[in-house]
Image (tube, rainbow, N blue to C red; front, side, top):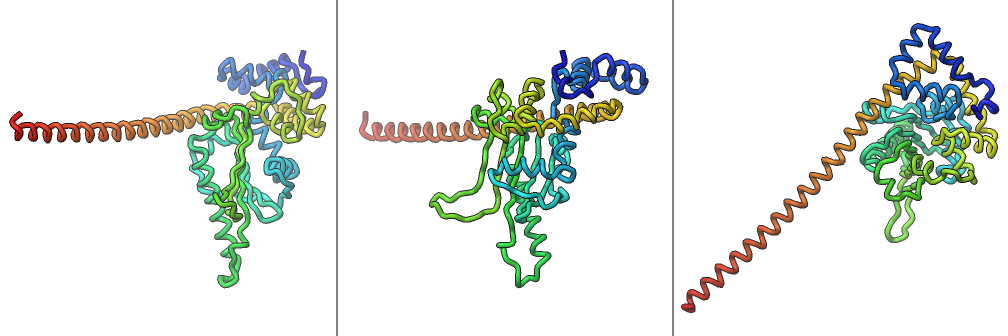
Length: 337
């Protein structure tokens, strides 16, 4: 029995969907080009048999687009930063991100907050290798971009660094990098620069990382207690029982699920978006493997460096021992031993 149909009566049955697909030559061709596993995933998604996977590209962008639903992004950022924020406007995202890396992104929005600070919010399907280094680079890029903008708008003599506001880099991972799994009980990590003396100084850059896979694993069969847990459950779980529990706890999430199920009414549109999703997934896998190979290569280089250093040290010890033995041999010869 499809338990979600009670809450979302617009959901169609598997039979109804298959009839519409098979009656359309083009749709039938697309459907048959997918592997059986993907066909089942698509049918389960559109009928609600296994709930909604919100991290499909077209789902999350429809739900969290700050130009259409600013209040949703506003609340999510507020919960992740731990303070109330107000969105002022959406900024063009023209940073220096490597173009091929965008295939790993589900969502990437840049917004300016009411206090002038800037927040870059992105969701990654598969976490990049070297997440700290990458995030630092893009944060620095946004900080420089803000500096150039402020400086360009002010007379040279009146410029002040106080006009530069904070930059927040917020990254949510569907599949988090290996570093995060060293802390299997922690899904939320916040970073900001601090001195070793207690001196307070605003260095402008702050980071928030959310491992959705670790959250999902740790919150199986647990009651949602806080609003942030509600949002993370919304983004990470497609289980019907979790969806029902969430909309009972927080009814305002129901229209978001309904919004996606309304998109599913246009079977031609949603099949096209699903096909694109599968293509991007293949690209993601390729780039993930490249990143993993880079990490493995770095590990081997480090190991090779350590081995080289150890060999050099041993050679030095052997040479010192050889010199000592030669010296001792000469001394014994001089003594006529």
